[in-house]
Length: 190
Image (cartoon, rainbow, N blue to C red; front, side, top):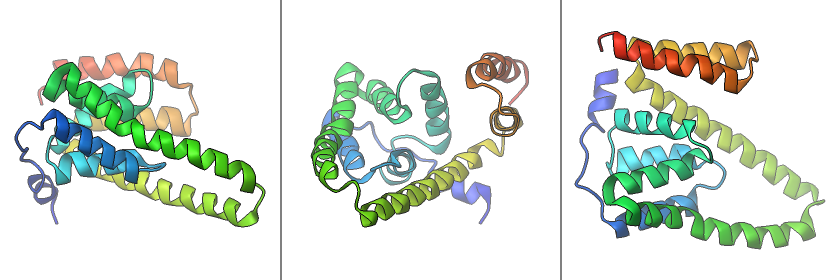
């Protein structure tokens, strides 16, 4: 299967979602996305509900990663704002955090009683492995739109080398590479 085939399957976007659809979409995401919600968010937003195409999702997520706070929270607010303004942002945010917050509080109370049980410790090790797999899957899906554009791919590669291999601090790396990426994207043809 070629890159073009993969991109064309999700390149069309549906009509603008209502505030209710934003709330329900992010509520369902919050309920099923324990620990690894970003890969599931991409699947829901791009592949299932088709609110954004793959390039729009990657660009919006890139913007959200520069903002303080959790990426998925920022993404929910940005999508809500984009489609329905402040009411959409509030609906998306409330949908995303309401049920998981209640569940986490309940699980925290239960965990206090059973935290030293070996089976519970093995359960959490398995959950961590599953979340890692979801994250890798999402990363590969996000790479597809970048394969056609050498500048973002180059900048992503530089970020990887700087952070993962050279172990440079994140903030100075971003302060150098973010303006460089903007300059390269602005000056070089697409």
